[in-house]
Image (cartoon, rainbow over all chains, first blue to last red; front, side):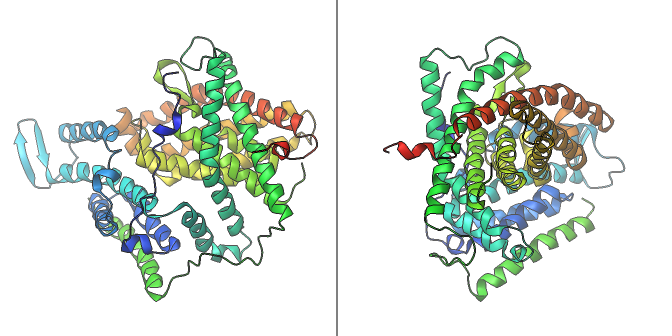
Length: 278
Length: 201
């Protein structure tokens, strides 16, 4: 056990408090833009379309006044993959590649199409990383839960439990630091008793059994806390129907326009990607 | 295990938190030979499905899927992580773990709880492996080929190999851990009273 302080290494995004146009948007709008950026970035086949999405992310980061270095700090581990792809692209090339040859080094030639496909791949990672990082940096935990409910409002009419999902997500946010703290306490307690969770020898059953004294108490404690919370909520007559909100996140006409433009942007990029061959 | 809907949702949230914590700390990965690691992050999903039914299982599955998407996008640790930034690979398959585990658990009709939860754990774990690898093959085939350096024809045997080797071991791990947690919880939650009630913090 080299590092007992797990929580220090937790690297899923953090909210960065600031006052920017992006911070002020309602959560539902941010969700829609998140989907409008991530879905085309992960599914579009065309490099140019993906580069367009990455450019949109860049613009949003600028508007939100979030440092690029902060958003892209996770890019390091992906870099070798991008380089490997670049090498493979340049060495093997495309069949019937009629595009402009940028450099000719004997058997290896670098064409416009190859460069674009490498750039597209890098842009895909960059766009997803920026969009996710930006969303978590500009949206508080409470807003993320409220946004889920707002966004699923139309589905709630069909009987999908939008409010329930938002409640579960809010509880999860609230429980993450508690569970992490308890995990740390349990790991330390078991380590003090001589437990070894490292890469010791033994078959899979032995390995799993070594994890039992860790997983069981942490999970059971979380269940106990959930039980106590549910009882407390029941005792206060918590009902999911007919609730009002302390924080109102409806938004005006500008928000509606922005939401509409998110859908148009996402669909537009997908259509563009279908039309472009690169 | 009857319960109000508030209880189902709160339990789902708590187990969702456990799966997020597993995803961002080393707890979610068992070190295994060859540098490969087994994941046990889907176990909270199975536990939620067994204890509180398919809705709770699906919600925890959603939280698990989104957290693995976020982790792959924000802090990738391996060459395979970028493939998990596709929601079709990281989120969609995870929604079915809970339903599968719950359906299997129901087959036992409330008898033999340890065995039933063990089998539910194994089925849930295997569902996760098969569906995720299947979606990897369908949605990310070309990129997977460039990561592994395989010909596109070699992808299916490659994925099937992982499904058999990792999948069976992960299913076994899920069976042991699910059975242990569910029996421990059912053992102490006999009265259905909150244990924290008599604590002074």
